Length: 443
Image (cartoon, rainbow, N blue to C red):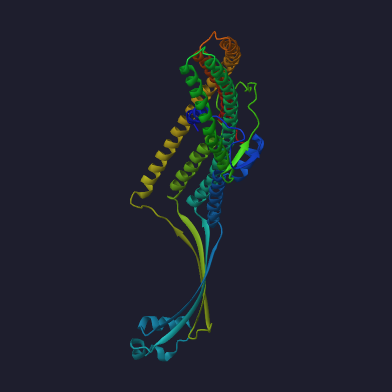
């Protein structure tokens, strides 16, 4: 995002040197407005969908912490057979089938094989686990973090879509300029051929005019890839199949206004996401500190024992409360707490750096917008002057008073000035869109 102007330079250079051949492009054509493109991208873009999945995963992780308060219930069914003296006597006790004969030393030392089928229903109920409560709070903050990340991803895709749309507009405008220049070059070639046939100029001038026209025609052919590449990128952002050639609204000839914003808002979505990351880390630090406190949990078990697989002959239960306290864990908690604190400090530094960088980008974008507005006014004047100069030179050239080189140079200057005007309008729209992106306030 921070290098959007630099990345766009490649597109601008491509469009300035490769122009649009109207009516010669292949593929399926479709008109689309900027609002339609942005709406489609928000609905179908894969990055936005991926960010939404991350948010859902965070919410699912938070719901897992319901176990801090909710009970755990389990059922088990097991069948065993043994002649181990201790286990055999224990099985008979559990089955409530002890008789006087079972206390015979011979029976105790050498019991017969015995079966035990046990059905157990176990219940665990958390009562007080301070560390888990803070972990649950941290998981809740994590859901808010991914919500802001998802929002910022959506804002970025909206900006990228508008930028792609502007690039297509620039491509069509460059194509229009070159089409006009090609028509002018062909008229100059006709005049040059006529003057050559009259013996007023030499063959070198004729060849120069022919080469100029051939170069313009080559650029016109190259425009097909330029339009298709720009359209494919817009299709990618919108989640549409490639191969569609979009027709778009022309670049407005007026400069776009932007409010007098001097600072990046602290409530921008990416800043808020970083803030939530710090808050979540803070909760984890508190959870680690709370792990020094005792834990209190309740438990219960209801059991059935029988010799038969389908039998439930005897039953028993056990219930209780357990207070446990991990006093020392070999310094693991101490250094875990230290690493968490370092992570918090790192996030705090990253947030401060991110805000500073955002302010630098805002200041630069404002200067770039101001420069583009000034350039646009200069280019408008330059286009008028270059157009008038070319008209005068053509008239004199037809009378044999100017050289072919001068006319072709004047035409090249006019094409460059028109392209410069289109580029300045593009830069105004792009920087205005970037300023909006930099100053978006999270909802």
